[in-house]
View 1 (cartoon, helix red, strand yellow):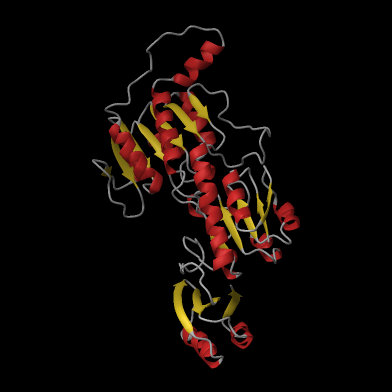
View 2 (tube, rainbow, N blue to C red; view 1 turned 90 degrees about the vertical axis):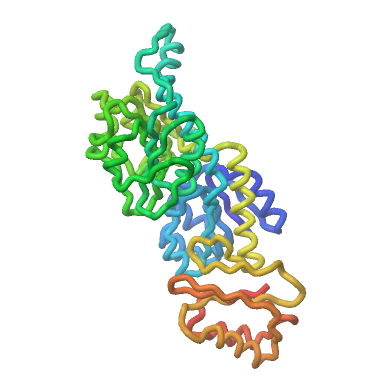
Length: 397
């Protein structure tokens, strides 16, 4: 059994998978579509971060692939529909690096408010610029959070503890934390926020979400932070508003096109601007978060491959069977149509297989049933289900 881990995934993932019997190949950079197609024969588990795109073509040609682990929050870099159609499970770490991202954003808010980027640069240049001009406390100022999910809500709580007033906007119905106030529109938030921090997801509809009109609607001399997705912001428009002085400072951690590997050249229209912090997509890159993500996602991959568990899968029906016990386990991924469970049980009963535990879950067009039997399954029952017109795959453990 082989696992391929890309983009410098934490050694905790390697240790977790090797302990489960996998041979692990670890690479520091990402791979292109063509490179992935060549690398995946013989690979059952693929681990990536945000810079590797797993396309429909990659999935179609990866005949040995069982699952993809996104060792990060987002999964938009994987064609989830194509993966589900082929029964390839996709897993991520939706909570493991939340605190790390929040702490980075808090640090950036304070740094920008105090104009630390330009102060430290001038010190390095040999200039003593001891002035309070443009430097402010964050206490009493208003933070506008766009996207109030796991990161947005925790940022809300920590920011309030620092004395910031928090408002937020989200298209989903999210309950407010603490004294945060939900606003009815993005425009309303932009008109009152001294700091705007984006925490939206990478769905295609969010491309170009924040552009020239939104920057123009922000309060004069407000601060802007994007630690969500690079493609949601028009950075040419941000540059213009920073240069004009309308935006007093910005911090950007994500970019529409990012270098593939450590040490590769980086370019951006935001380079060289005063009071602009540029970081190389490190919002969740703390040792604590990467270790947590490493073992968390690796464990989900291993449990899916070795036990049939789809807990926290983002594209397959979610079933959480108990640990393997003496006997046998059957996993049956199928079209979500009426009568399949009866078909499964009829095949088992006809073969004389005694069911001791069973879990069924459905999601969109797929259904997944996990069945434990007291004795090893008969080849007859497995063959019957494999021939079913509704079968996507059958696996036994």
